[in-house]
Length: 294
Image (cartoon, rainbow, N blue to C red; front, side, top):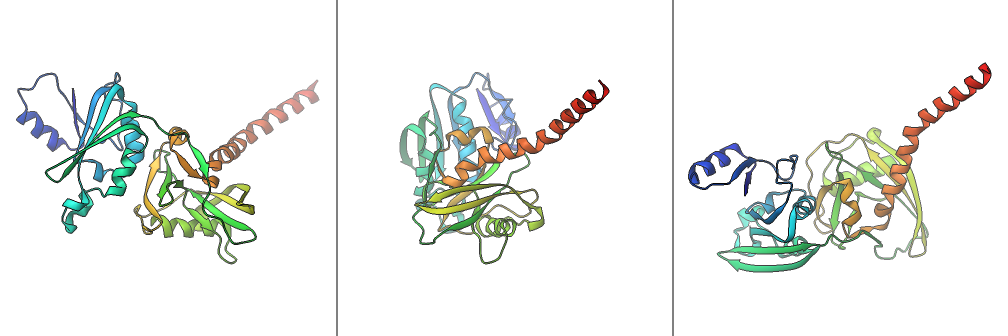
């Protein structure tokens, strides 16, 4: 049995209060940010998140990772206050019904019990949904141009927003007037997430060309190499939340807005080209010089 908390004070207090309990490993670990290597590599039959989930920023990624550590038949139990039973001043520690619905998505069975103002959610059978490209509503324009901002954290995880349309999206949107793609990406990033980037730190790495309901669409994929600020949700009417996702998990996150779903292939092909170009040039030069010597 492993008992986990991210503060040393809580671990010390638990050790003292439960000194008579045997076969417990007391682990100081931030399940959202720390390396999960100290956890049991053989997995768990039961994982309980008690009064923790509302404080997790990257909820989808964290729950995905914990689900991967469940043994067959195991359960993830989330115990959380709910908004309906929480004073307005403390709503930040509780989940509303929309968040509870999102929490249960991607699991074979979800059981809910309510007691003492808390919701007890028992999740079994993680069945992470295959990623599927989906469209938004039809547009009235004759053509569309837009920009998507690719933002990563210090661990290389990519920022995606869970929109009110029920899909994941990169920060981004249509260009406005004469602004270029880099400026559009920086503007949309600030408007949608609260993060601030200088257009000088925004670089177009590839272009996506497709159509939306028959209307031609050109979308620039813009890599943001530096940003400041605190991640927020300034447009709650459009997005439920923003969070960072591991790249390896992007194949099983469910519905993704079409251009955002297309970006990984084009983006990484472009990066690979940039990385390989000096090597290829060097190899060609070496062959030419070898030919001259012979």
